[in-house]
Length: 346
Image 1 (cartoon, one colour):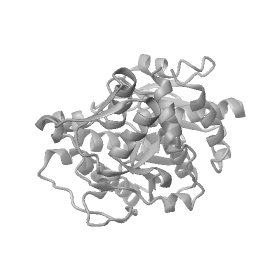
Image 2 (image 1 turned 180 degrees about the horizontal axis):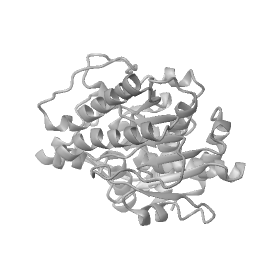
Image 3 (image 1 turned 45 degrees about the vertical axis):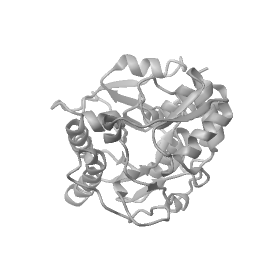
Image 4 (image 1 turned 180 degrees about the vertical axis):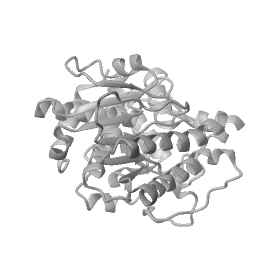
């Protein structure tokens, strides 16, 4: 159950997104809307619609209509269009008579467990799924596509500073764990190729480590494991030293950045998403959760299978100045965002 402070923060956030008038009477197709990032984007759009008179037509694409209905059940007056979509099949996207103005592509594997157990599907899904979206957008004269990429495209570098958008490092292409960053890198090049060959307008966002509510039971990312353990067991289990530096950003801030880039970003440009006040180590993040919840922390060794899914980047902090320069600023401080997750599980 999404908490009251989650919706309080939505109200503050939508007041600061520039050029929202560009969305009036427009249709937006969103993939991955039942996920953490896509769901937050829809939550913002629902609130914008409530404030402005329901003038944005929202189409949610996915495999499971019931999951989408359950996710957005809190808004009884909100009616979205459902578009059946499996990014791995050969079927074309069918939006009926709707004329789509914008596409926000959030769908894709984002699970360390799947990187380890389904590297083939993860890699192919990144490229094949995006190609389906780009082909649809080209054929239906979509104004702009926004692709949600990842900080993992930067790979491993010797840079001790936060990564800028042109700071590309090493990715071990013979390690199957590279299915995720390699898929994201190829997908970004595919966007550039559609622009050069077909003139399709696109923008890219590269979030860091995204956390927030709702906390799903099948989410195996570290932040979700930590907060569930804090609530259920009062003991957070860490399976590393936790010294990896990460750019943590709350899902609502990520969603506002997505809308900001969609409306104000430059064609063919990529933008890091990072809360400058939330660059902490994994251990710092766990300790914040423990301090707020009263839980303890213990350290255990990971299994070899678990290690296969781990991100190898010791520094995945991001420089978000380029995004700030087009009018975006993070609003949800780290402790506040952790409260979102804890209250969601109460």
